[in-house]
Length: 348
Ligand code: AMP
Ligand code: MG
Image 1 (cartoon, helix red, strand yellow):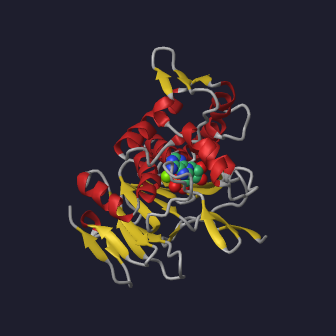
Image 2 (cartoon, rainbow, N blue to C red):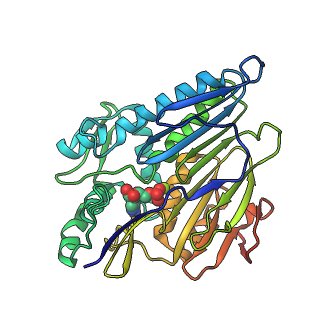
Image 3 (cartoon, rainbow, N blue to C red):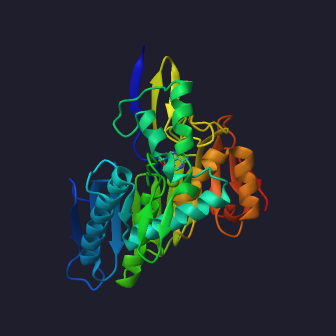
């Protein structure tokens, strides 16, 4: 049996020229310390991904410090594999006192769960474990194993008592915030920066990118969308004050007996979602929502994702790349998107 473990790093990459970074985990650097305008950057490995933050403006150094602390604090709350995290305690005991952040994240996930008929479902964890993703002990489960676990995937079974802040799940049900945690984290960093007077920032948390304001030369941020089947980007987005979050079948997967199995699972079948999408990048001013929608629309598949957007076209836009190598964007970003590849534009 041939089993190959493959992981590809960041799904979005930057075409902008940014201040230099120091290496290593949780480090930061600053430049131009005597000017009123300062700039600083930091990087860290957390939430199972490489993260980089750049900030420009007064107090940039202090803001970067706080952002790195925030990432670590949120990682400690939500890492399913850290036995002290709120998620692990909930998964172990069926109940936990939720922090404000956990409540907020749960509520965003719940609203997208509802609006997508369960395509996003954070009670996916028993299934994610069955496929071996958390431990990288990958394995294609039998139909019987999948059928045993499927009844546990049901977010409507999770309850949140907002007076006691108690989050509870029924017996054996377990949650995983992997589809939404990075989006929330980026959103909170941007909010933190806004509160500190930072005028311009770029937060890159793996496939989650969120920018604040414009680049320091006042031009728009230029974000390249990774092409899963080539070196040339699928396209470039010119944006400001926006999150761009990508979910893709190439980001994390394994191969067994010549077949590829990726990490975005369809809660209705128990198998990797196969609705004809290779990657979908969501553009939204709210980073948490962008992350929730990237996973949900990937699961919905091409046709249902387009339909979902047509019913919510005021809220977000997307760049979709299908398994048939079609490049599709939504009307709202027609003027922000350039590509050397042919693409079609969906109307609301
Ligand atoms: P993302 O990269 O944001 O699309 O999130 C993918 C991660 O979310 C996976 O690695 C799993 O931990 C988890 N996940 C997979 N499928 C789902 C799903 N249908 N709903 C919620 N979380 C999921
Ligand atoms: Mg997501």
